[in-house]
Image (cartoon, rainbow, N blue to C red; front, side, top):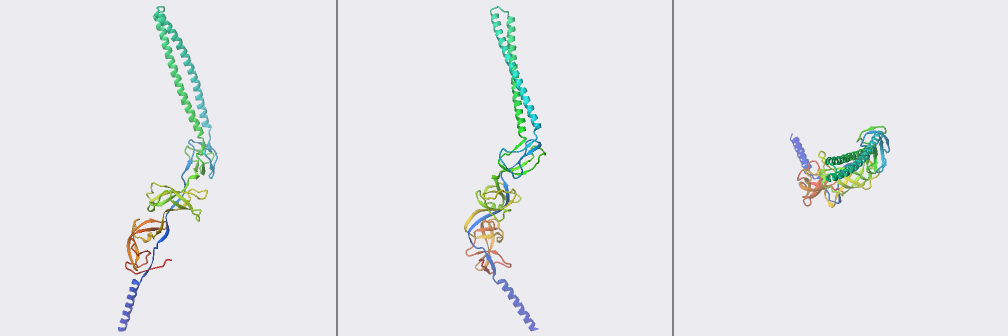
Length: 381
């Protein structure tokens, strides 16, 4: 029994020693190393879009009679794209012409009536002057003088009525002319004209279709306004500025990087996804560009001659500025709160302050690590 107890005691001591050794032996860690010539980039996911995109159609409704363009065609400003059946509107134009012609005839008649009334007034005025002079000389009776005065007054009133009727007919003529212009405009609207030099993205109707006013017939884009619309995480969007350069990788050409520049930054962020929109023009993207194609964007927001970059996953309690990290200092593990700055597109953050002299930031923490534990830094070269 004494021998068994001795063996058990030796085993317990050995196990205890092993545990102590395992707990106290140095653990291997990898640490962040300063880097030179560090480019700070932000990643965004976006798509190919066009700043000038128009869904064009007719301002009136009728049956489509011709279509002169199709998807993929280049069209010039002023080019006819489609027409509607014009017979009904042509009849309205003809009717408006007839009304205008009738008004012109009525206006001529009214002008003749004014001339005749003016001549009558002149005759009655002359006769009245003679009778008034004779009445003053007691050659003609007062009654006769009063009658000629009345005739002059009646002729003057008739002239005023004739001139008023002429003015009414003239105004009606202006209304008829405006109505004719309206009908002619509506007839012109039976032709769909390209508003600018464009590419036809889609044709949404065929000949023989009865369309309503406002129905989309063609979708057009200005090819000079194609750009990349990208979404950037709000946490990183504070580094964005107009004119910053970036690289664009299209889904259809994953092996090629194209060059872009920020042309617009959205003034309103997405409240649900917490993202900000940016638009980049592309200087060397392939042609043609396909709307809606997915694109990866990496925007260069800055450059450091030298920087210490730490993966975000190695930072605990990170609020975008402050966070705690594990340090390897004087051969032991410890924790410290550091300040951080710019981020890059690889999920890393720049250390800007708080790092003690001689300390290294641990980026891979093994199991069982605790403050005060001895560490051995692995060579990452």
